[in-house]
Image (cartoon, rainbow, N blue to C red; front, side):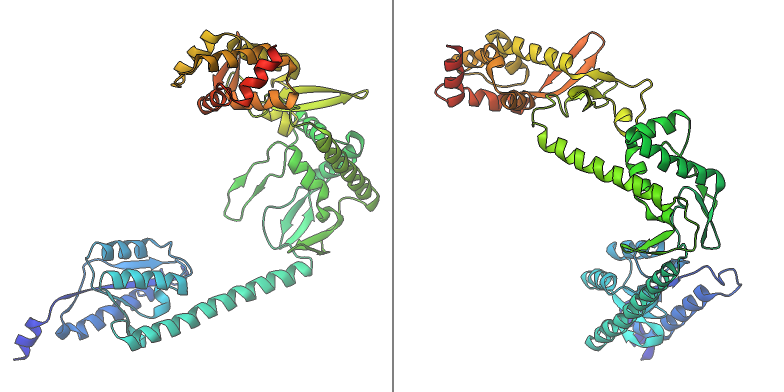
Length: 453
């Protein structure tokens, strides 16, 4: 009778999942992973009368944290559940599956969607019952609470250590080496840092300072991680130098969450030089703000459009000499690192004039306008629209600079600088919009006709 009862029970395929947070002890002949797996398999054997049978695969995650779901065996387990290969998941304790309540909720949704039960062997929990689900959530809440408290203790320890002036990790700053959690002066790099502060007071420009340092082959901090990974130093750029010159670490302080505390390391910059540098930076910031406010929106006709022959974007800039501004388009290396050698630095006016001349040539010819529209796949139904648009080229010089800038941005997608001249790529949607704007009986067409008259 008992044999008949066992045979009548449907088979329930059981998978045992095991996990250990660290590698400690895994090299032993019988380790924690083995113990968890044996406990799960023994429990399956005890439920054989209920039709429980083990699956062939093992789902072991040695040396993986339970705080996230980035675990290979767990991903394989969930994939097999999705494929309908598993009916019951067993773990030694609930925190072996996860320590995150949010992650556990996601897993429970997967379990319930596929009719899979969850069992914690040593805690007598079975998610197939309402009481089991309640106990699961209670125990997991405590597991997450323990994890959050542990994280809080670690954060408090880091904060206390920083307040004592200890270095708590990260990329070592230029000028120092890290020895036993303390910043120790690197003499060669320290001289470089002092030179940067002193030269900035004279040059008064991070861009020019970067150019000078890079021309001499000076580099940023080179260091090796505890894992042995070598991080080579790179070229200086404007932003890096600005951050370095603002870093109060060189005054002998350490920061934590926006607050600065006295450090145990030796300062590299004296107070007088520091104050001079901050005064120059403050003056530079105010001057930049004034120039930004004074700069018209149309100061760079080809802003965001101009590219060199290799496809690199060129950026507008300017210099001021004896009260007069001289505008240029420069390559990114010049813009960021201050490197002049081998990079483009082109006067803005000739390039803009050549671009405008091509635009005017196209606009001044109804046939050319029609050809461009056809090439872009734009239908031209009204001849008067093309005529009105062609007159725009005739009155271009009478338009306000802001309006010229708007029309260029509307019509042109990009401008490539080639050895033989310029190549303009037209913007399809912009031309469609322009044709609508200058269609008969619109304000645009009427204004052009009035200007032409």
